Image (cartoon, rainbow, N blue to C red):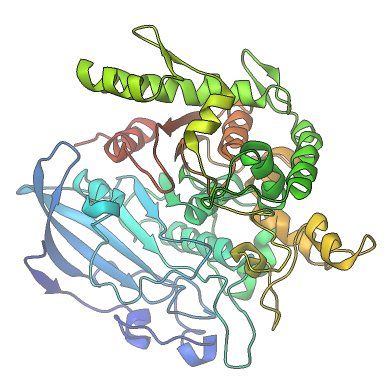
Length: 494
């Protein structure tokens, strides 16, 4: 609930582009190509908002809301290449010094679509279901919150050219991080303690941002848009249901959900499903993943790994939190679960039956007819969508067809696993928070499982958990995430 707004000075960038409702278009049209990237700490509006934490306690937060018209010197479209910064100054009447607080870098990207914060007049304090957002909880905990916009796959200019396809979104997020690092000492908060977060495609991009910090692969793209000369490595990564590893996602999906029916009750093409599922084994073996108690992870033991590492513990936690009567009712309705009073066990086959209908057809990501969002993500120029897997391309164009020459490089730019397996990146995050629901069929459970296994094997600090019976986009422990930020960053949580 907003109560008061006090306007302070305008930065040079804000003076060149309206503080609300930035003009879209080319760098020249936006008029920002020569603007300084120096942040002006005196340019803000002071606002008061009431935020309710996860324990139901309301907090009155006075914060400074800064609008940065563009975080690059040569924006392609300032409507999307802008960011907002919220800095708490008083919480429940007590002054707060956020100069060394962690920075929550919260993207709102979904479906690899464009995301803009240009017209926002305050922090995005409400999340899914009307609860306080992660941003709001972080602000109430005394953290600095940065909300970046980014280009997305559907953006097209007047000449029909798509200018937000891969790798635009990750390049923009990196540029926004560079802007913060470049303005160390001017931007409030500890720029060495930036923690990203995002959901779905935003979770994938958060993972990619964490995995690819300071990778030289992105340098020409960052230079092209006038990104600041600074590091784009981040301290920690939060990813909810990340839709990533797209070039292998069709295989992974069929391995995981191939036996599950569509919502109509029908099964997908059995030949297509079988071929894709069979192809997943060699890919999984190529990752050379290992997990304690399982050894090498393969197509033969991946189900047991997921079951014992994530699914059964998730069900156990869920059942343990229920009252005796509610637990008895749930177990009666779900007799496939064996409950010994402290632990839930069940088979992988029964788990798949419990999940029920799969969300997507086959292939799920690189559709034969190019209708899926991911085909649009890999569009280029005036071509709206392209195949990015040989399987789908050759199904449509014949056995001799080859992917467009630029596709392999763009796949590397968009896949965190490349930076964790093919070329292990020393600049990656070392702290990871990964979450998704057990009934999320937007992608395979192996995607997050593989990510978690690889990061753990590399020695990183990894906190991965699945929410029992939850679907896509679930976030059942946002308060714990905010406390986790304090723990890994060494910052005192309010």
